[in-house]
Amino acid sequence: MNRSPWAWIPTLYFAQGIPYVVVMTLSVVLYKNLGISNTDIALYTSWLYLPWVIKPLWSPLAELFGTKRSWVAVLQFFVGAALAGVALTIPTDHVFQLSLAVFWLMAFASASHDIAADGYYMLALPQHQQAAFVGVRSTFYRLANIGGQGGLVYLAGELTERTGSVVKAWTVVFWLLACLFVLLALWHAVVLPRPAADVRGPGRGAARGLLADFFAVFASFFRKPGIAVTLGFLLLYRFPEAQLLKLASPFLLDPVDKGGLGLTTKAVGIAYGTVGLTALTLGGLFGGWVISRFGLKRALWPLVLAMHVPNVAFLLLAMTHPTSLAVISSALAVEQFGYGLGFTAYLMYMIHVADGPQKTAHYAICTGFMALGMMIPGMWSGWLQDHIGYVPFFAWVLVATLPSFAMAALIKVPDNFGKKADT
Image (cartoon, rainbow, N blue to C red; front, top):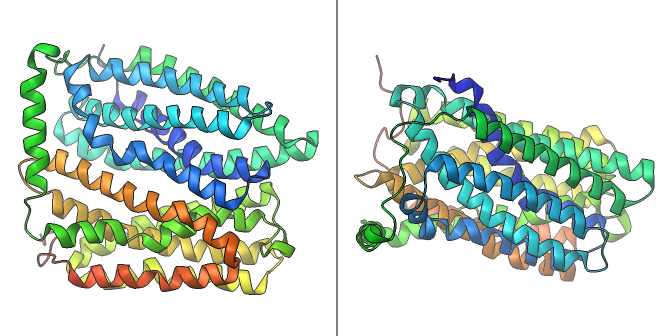
């Protein structure tokens, strides 16, 4: 049966976004609600970036064994089981250790699902439809983020208020997520087309040759001109944001006497998870338009400034402790809109770096360094904040923009790269 891409692309990329937002965002709010220290939250949840860091290293497995469609189905059922596993660990006495172990498994499954889903997308659609649906992919991935970071956080707060128990509230949230994901897995097991190009890999017999080709492609990435500057930019451009992101939700949730804003979990779901992420999405769309209009080279510095200058919003919030949710939401919207703007420059630079005969593999390597640039600074951010407080920490985040500015000054971008051709 030749099904419309509308039957599976929105749900496939919604399913791709859910486990990522659960591992990276919901885990932080869950642990904060359970009273885990900022030091431990930032350190251990930052380690969860590791599967995305090393994702390019095991991507050949999806080529060697099975079809992309079968990988998608199996991994989605695995993520559903992992979500149920988290629900089972929350009421236990060792919730932090046990749930972290399950989040680790979920993170590896999610990163592997990214590989399979993106590969399947390219096999299941002709090139003109791939381009036509790229915006649909992005939109539903973002909706998963807003639904997770906004809707589910709000739901956890509402259930906490009704039941009087953080444990019960989050247990219900994760059971609901598990049921949703199993339904998505069942849906995709039925509706995903079976493209003729999606054939079983060559298996063990051809593994040696395929792996040799893979390592040759990997080595060619590190022979690119100016690779040291490129790696410095990939690792340091988000250096301040990597630290800020891990402490944003704890800052909003911590009581005023600890330097936070004392928001309820429901309010965080509204201000940061809904208003903030919507602004982030709009910033990304506007940033894409700016680059298509002026090219990356001309737009680079305005976008770099848009990325980092709005971080001052967190410093002002920490200094003034406003009580109005509208004021807090507005400040977060400004910061997230700027982040969305600036992140488009980063994505376009990765596209420039990856350009060439092995662009797909080289882009995957770039995303690995992107994840590493988020993982390492995030690991120490909670420890630093616990020792110096929120105001000095957010002041440090502003100082931490200097390496990003330095690397932006060193990279080389061709004239008119990313600019839409005049017609």
